[in-house]
Image 1 (cartoon, one colour):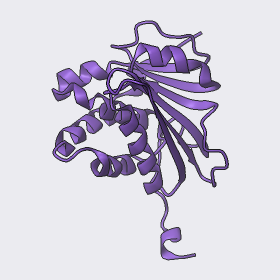
Image 2 (cartoon, one colour):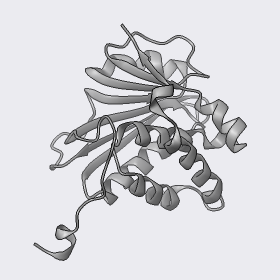
Image 3 (cartoon, rainbow, N blue to C red):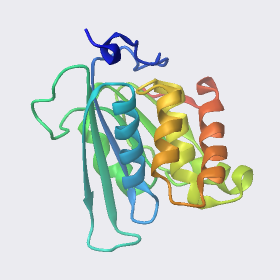
Image 4 (cartoon, rainbow, N blue to C red):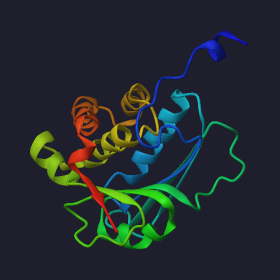
Length: 202
């Protein structure tokens, strides 16, 4: 065993932290930073020394159109790079919620922006509705941080990656000049109490 292999991976804590294989999808519209969310999460997973595949898809419009980012995280090599049965879906607008909820596993988790998604699709297990865009505007002062704030909440609730890894990845991937405000947004997202936002859906 070499020195790197002997160093323990950062601890993860959350309702999905024990799963050795995870399929995650971020969905929203162009301009919401959906692709960046997936890229940061994928980079964070590599910092946790896990296997990862990240793919993305855009709609025909650069802004306001369709946008999706999938991340597969595993403790073992990943044989199939396409997400098909989602462990978690994170959506920032109504269309993404309507289109992608059906891809969730029966025990999958939905996290959504409750300011943007007013009609919750039926889900089998549980969901968290958090007003990400409202918090970004009122607490951070910049709606463009909604994606990073939401990603912080995702990590805080689920533990899909460690907190230290997502902080490191965020600082590596956000545009120059935005590290301070995005750090503030990530910290707020990580600090949210999951119990305040949990919905049990019959």
